[in-house]
Image (tube, rainbow over all chains, first blue to last red):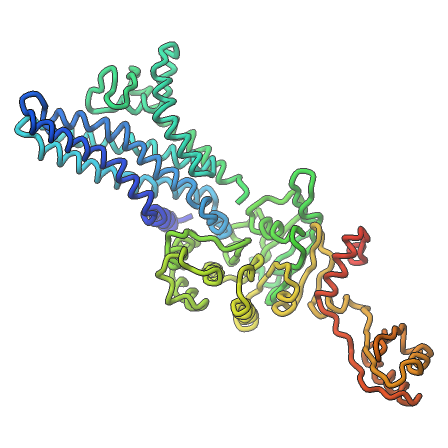
Length: 265
Length: 322
């Protein structure tokens, strides 16, 4: 298959996703709305009591908002987009029409991944722009984060959401059902991961939890309890974090590709 | 590799099992090129299963298949390059427009396909509505969009599974004309599966009848309707004196069988249809007034019901034995 066909196939998958208004609006709402709410509430609190309440923006606000976007709501938006990309053709009943073109099923699966990542990162860029805008506009004279931190924060956000998005594409392709993939992944991300992180008897095996590996790359210190996620932080080396992250991607991509290749269409 | 002289579809001993049940039980099918071929059978006979197997949507359990001369699944991608198919009902991304749905498939088929989108839409009469979302389309429009999607392949072979399901009489007529034009004017092969005998009889040149996963018979529509070669030729003869006519006919070597009906006699000829004139002459010479002499035209429907009812009675039809 030529690269021109691959690019067109990714473009077609991106078209399917970006035209799905419901998914796009919900993903944007999940990524942007919590930041806007934070900025508004903190802004009101600060303006009513400047001595006691820190401003919504500035370095402090940035450090508060970063985990909200990169580790909590951003991944949820990524799951929303990834599951749609992974199971959208099957849900619409169009998968068989793509198979009868004679194109390899693995190629059909593979084109979903960059398309989902493209839309996911577009949403994250919008959300991150809102966050940075709020950080600087509502700093009220307090110190603001440097350019390096802003860039690192963006890369971290793209990494943390991208990895969940890819896992979601693979998992939804594996299950063939968007609702069940959505429920399972959100349940894992919001409930199961947090419970497992807090079971200290699990020891170093908790390093295998994806959110722990991802959190390792955070450009801001998450502390023992990382903010709104409420989970504990398991210490691990960068090499371990890389291996765990790549392992999750590899396993779910392989499972999704295998299922797409072998299923009755 | 030149495959242009091979049949459009050829299967040998094709078997597809779902657990213990054989949905396809040794299918030997030959679909010649350049015709409309009907694949006729009652619901659950295995029509969709054979289509799904041919297209690689589900693997075969045993047997061999060739599509446009290419072995499937070994060279599936080559085989399907010039095949357009609608399996079961045509499905689309409802949130996309008709044109966008075609763009999605064109992207998968290859760069040369994009140029066929507008002609395909025009060919099925959807050019004006192609910018609307598919969720606003009627069933008939979706069927036509499905055909347009098939045309993106510039197909040598179109495989259409129950294509007139949900169409109104106007839509069915339009569809028939489209299929005939594709065959007669564009030289394509159209393989139509259907449980509607009338549709196959009016649209197709040849057909195979399938039941319970087996091909019961196949051939030209006229031959199938007549019961194949060596079929009986029957006449309805209306006469002024039934008793006398029966005496004459029963004594004639030209007649194999007679059965009186109201004011007329059903006559089974022992020879070819041309002997009807001699039967008429014999009656007239015997002083019997012949007011009507009409060959009985067997419909595919009668033949189909006969075959499938024989199967229902667990009797093995001659065709199956053969």
